[in-house]
Image: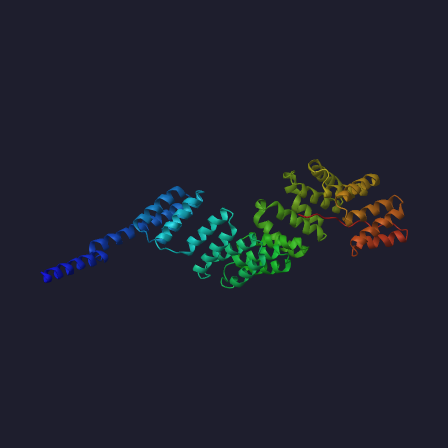
Length: 408
């Protein structure tokens, strides 16, 4: 009897052990699994084609079928979550990523998508954590993950850290301008114009067929007052873009030409565009200034009137109006325009100098000296004010005012 009991016990233990350790899959099961993986790859390829065509509802369905066929396929989860985000459904995308995590899948792309979701929900610290995780999982080999982390740092008002991150990793991608250009943006944000310019110069050879970097670099040079360099960058860009050039580029080039003492070139840059864009007040003002500099007061008046109808109290409208009035010996009108301007821009050195010229023309030498002195007080290097004071002191005619300019 004891032998029988022992034998039964051993048998029960053997049955229990069999339940605890499933049998390995049969050849048929392995074949079916492999076939499902093949079908999943086909479905995934189709989903990616649908994604390229913008058919995101189909993407979600097709990638979902791929996941059903092969729950270990990380790319299927990624494509499905991307499609759900494109459809504006971040909660569904998050659920897809959670399913991937439950399947034991941990991928840099999934962490990145969680960062995107967090950013859309305005959870910037959470987004930063996810972007950092994506970069770490990718072992710093993906530009997009590094850029996303840096941009998130900037959004969190940590631009110095962002610039350090970008500069440290830009050398890893010598043929890609993404991080170099991003570094230029951040440097400009930090007020480091020279650092931004250097990075743009480094990026230019990497984007020979692009227009964005030359445009941004050229506009940076304009803001720094480096007119010749800016024009050298913007002129070929304008020729390339033609009518597709942005108004900012066209105005910036005209400003460079005007500042460089070539108002005729500025007229060529602006005339036809301004004729077709009466709503562009800044272009009309620049055209009026260029016309004044070439002595075409009729064109200057027409352009200024178009600008004045839209923005009658725009400071630059008042300044150019005063120049035209001064040139036409309407001293009272010029003085009135300049005083209106100084109410808005009390530090406008050009306005003080021109007002001094008007006073000098009216025979009010003391007022002229006062206005030239005020201009020098605000800008000790103003050559116009220096020459004007000398002329007033010698009781001679005042100098002709230098061309005035405006931001593009």
